[in-house]
Image (cartoon, rainbow, N blue to C red; front, side, top):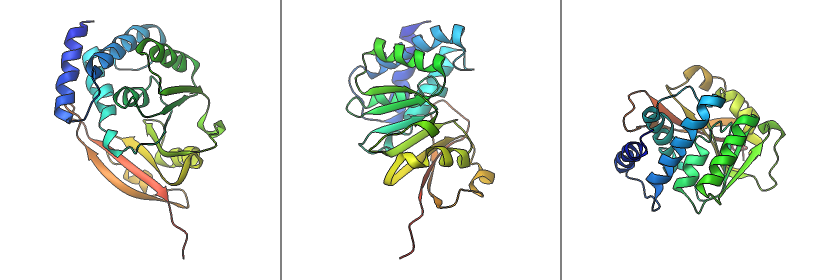
Length: 214
């Protein structure tokens, strides 16, 4: 892999996103892509094989949700190869992230990447979200290609604090899924996302609990 070329592509993407970024972010993200490509051959972590596509379809596609996070700890449900949580953690070194996945091969890769990248703000948990408990809860719980909207809400809804949000990253707007939300939940916001270099549709859906009648 041409690491300098990948870093250059990432730098262009970061400039297009106009995000405040810590020093060395592009180099760290390029190192992550190199690790992902290396492990992908043996562990089949993602169907995306080309590093250049990983930049657009994984790295930049993850970073577009940064403006919708608050400052508190974030839970990434079904993180897979660390998407979006590990990428977000690199961009927000002062913020805490919990990366949750039930697959051992995927959590082993994330643990390896966290170690190689020197991340101090990431906790990797191998578990099903239904079995995971965090006493303090989270203000933001995010998922990327984890499940249908309804399944995501039912599985992860108990993880958020009062007033918190579930953030579902989707491609096209899933109208059928939105028509059958679990009781007690509502769609709070829909954001159309623009990922540099990606022509496909991307949306971020914010869900919250319905307020009890006064």
